[in-house]
Length: 531
Image (cartoon, rainbow, N blue to C red; front, side, top):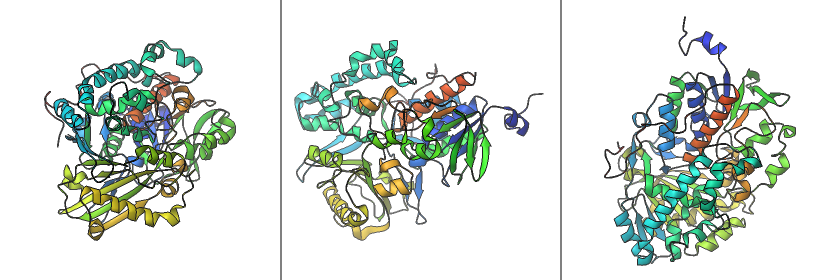
């Protein structure tokens, strides 16, 4: 007799995996493992799924993304859904944005550009800065198309030792790496105006890094926007996490909310379960999706972390943090784009201040106005504005308890540059999150919202491994492991870790490319994935 997938008897007989944390990586791993027949238990310390990609909902009806608001490169998540017998497009409505975002350069008279995936229009936008740079848009995209294709095999497998750096796929990709160049230096090959380079390099902030320090590989970030689109999931990015949880549960995974893990249990070096709620939950494998710098010292004994001891974690390099304002505001603002990025007039100085731990004197900021696309994000006649300011992590010198009120006032003043001079009088709901709050409320180590820095000394096998070194049966997903931070990259990391786990248990792994899977279409190439 064949037992149904959710039968209690079959659940007891199957291999069991515990997933710690219901963030994007944990949910992707839960889907993939459950789809391959494992009994999966997700243990989430909070009362909602999504981790930093959750939705904040207020009694007044305002909805905010807590963290990520740009949904990029849906191909990877489409493949994950398809490999689990589901369709991303059936589960989540995605609207492709055009313009993708508005970029404002510096002071009161600075130029304003609307970034669009329509290349002819984009060339006209760049020509406002430099006509010669406009002519190099397509060569830049072609170069990065080749770079991504060369690096895809590298980004789709795990790295556990120095020997992995000499794999054939890595050797083939090396001509595209140019490790001696930063993102800005790489962009000089195509664009002479520093503002054009900022247009294609501010995206390093997705990694919490400066384009003047970030490795040149990451010019692919801006390429992905123009090649594959910037999307808004209707209901916010939290709608994606909710859909992932729904599919995982449909496949038999159990998601336990309000279930903080006290420690991972080991028999020697082998992870054998987790202590939760004063009880021991046994497992054949454990996947840790919690923030690495925060969780590893608490959940994994120091003696088992040969490469990532307490001392090493304390001495590692971390991304910047963010100062956040979530504002429920009376009124709609048609003059605002869905995404707006305002760059400090002296951008290099702004970045130096953040890197040296100082509070920015003239901050750059990002404003999310989702009702421009999705009116459901706020009550009728209102807006849910999300203001993000990059700042130093908690290794800086800022006393946030003393500084936060004045910094908030400065951030609101900066909104006047966007035509919102009277915003304070319109605020009907407000929540502020500082780097201290990221650490204390959301368990983010050092308040570094983009995790470990992505310099060459902390990439590939120099990052905490997908199969955690020095242990058996313990796997990592999330921004703290290979390939790194950012939603598409975290999804890929979950696929890598799930593959390793399944194969270590003698089971069939996960396909990384599914023939016949139709990607999200681009404008002019077929039906759009829209609401």
